[in-house]
Amino acid sequence: MTSLKELQLSNSPLRRVPDFIALGRLDRPIGIYLLMWPTLWALWIAAAGNPSAKLIFIFIAGVVLTRTGGCIINDFADRNLDGHVKRTANRPLATGRISSKEALTVAALIGVLAFLLVLLTNRFTILLSVGGLALACTYPYMKRHTYLPQVVLGAAFAWAIPMAFGAVGEKVPGFAWLIYLATVVWTMAYDTLYAMVDRDDDLKVGIKSTAILFGELDLLMVGVLEATALVALILLGLQLEFSLWYYLGLTGAVLLWSWQLWQARDRSREACLRAFLHNHWVGAAVFAGIFLHYSLA
Image 1 (cartoon, rainbow, N blue to C red):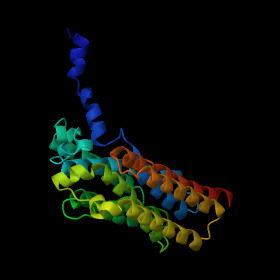
Image 2 (image 1 turned 180 degrees about the vertical axis):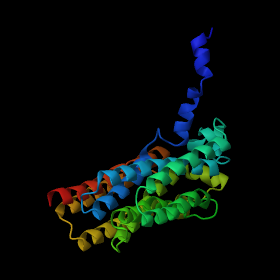
Image 3 (image 1 turned 120 degrees about the vertical axis):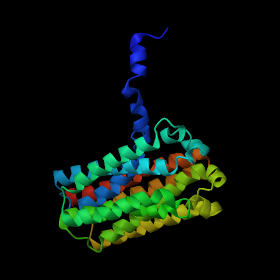
Image 4 (image 1 turned 135 degrees about the vertical axis):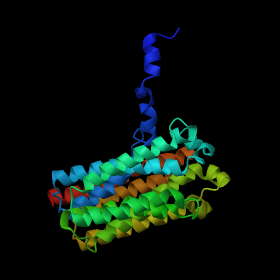
């Protein structure tokens, strides 16, 4: 027999907290890490290794809010498709545990909080944030119209880079776009691995991705994209005359990328997902190189 306490708990609004956590993927923070690392690359370089505590807080909090809001927008756009994909079938919007109205309300609140954070910076950064919002809202619908939605995702994930430079110096120097390029193509690489997890289901429901576009050349193209990111980061290091520490960080990234390609060689769902999740360490390795350059060089 159900106790009064259990009955009261079952009727409590708190019982829905896990669903809202899952809606924003706060229980799966890999997306936060993947968005955070390039942001910190840019912030540290823009501030010559000495960013203010205020800007570190603003950008890390902004990363959490942006990624959370982006997940909600993505799930709203895919609410009628996620139920047909094995990996996403149990998401709160797909199952109806959270309504579309509730999801949009939460996304709007998160958007307001993110904008309030941007207001703590400067006019130039505020203007740049409009572009980031447009990219974040556009990406979820790209997979219906193009086999390159990962390009738009990369552009959205990398948008914090010009914003970081804008927040520090109210301008975006030319070399900052090398970081932007590296982030875009790296995002395309790891999101292709992620899309390989769902490729069979995506083909059935008509979702497009680079994993489908590349076909049997998928891992080769992931390697090409990673090599492009590496070249951009090397050019950045040469232009800014970075020390050995930076290149040791890049060496770590190359080793990690190599492991991922080997890990995903059989293209199984589990292996591709492990390879995707492993990219968190790539971002950390590059940041470690940047941090040590400014701290020890």
